[in-house]
Length: 285
Image (tube, rainbow, N blue to C red; front, top):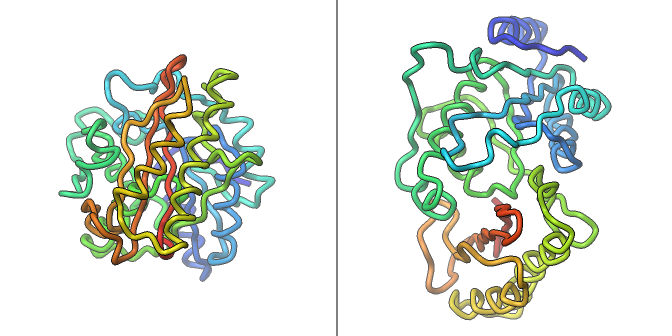
């Protein structure tokens, strides 16, 4: 596996692969890899000949009071895991390589970035859209695979790709969970022992909502109330939001009469860790 640290070398690598007739699959990550990330490589392998993983903790998607400085960075370990999963190349640039001096250009996807996670993280999706577009331009993938745990991110990137006529297929991969149902996340390592025990309530709340939907319930308030009731059992975990929205415009729904996203964000009391999860009612992203 090749480890690449500059934009020019990455582009040259991709141009060489394309000239040989190979298709390129990109798996964008911020590192601290877990089985959820590695599952994305497997999906990329089903669609493409050459698998590239980016590992870059993107500073522009972190607010001033967020966890940029303490976000786990384990490049040597991550590269070993990426190689074992079947990656052909890892693109691991420095912040200076992606955002050189006098950098001034950002991508803003309108309307769908100010709700859900965007309501409390106003610059987050501008940073996400900007770095993903840069990765697309540098790596030149035919396909890019993103995890569905970050459902709003997937929807924003799909919107950007369509609006800007990008020639890359966006694939939303299923959420990978721990044995007790907690969605795998690099931030799970922040949790205290008791917070980790209570974090399973998030998945239980989503599964309760799914059961209500499967039984025919279409009232969003009834479904949200069920989820809220289960989350309220926790002493160290509280909901930042519980919302049901459509999967195109992210508009709040009163009744489910289309594909719907039930999205939850929670904050823990001891470590202040923010956890997100979701379930798509009526299909997949």
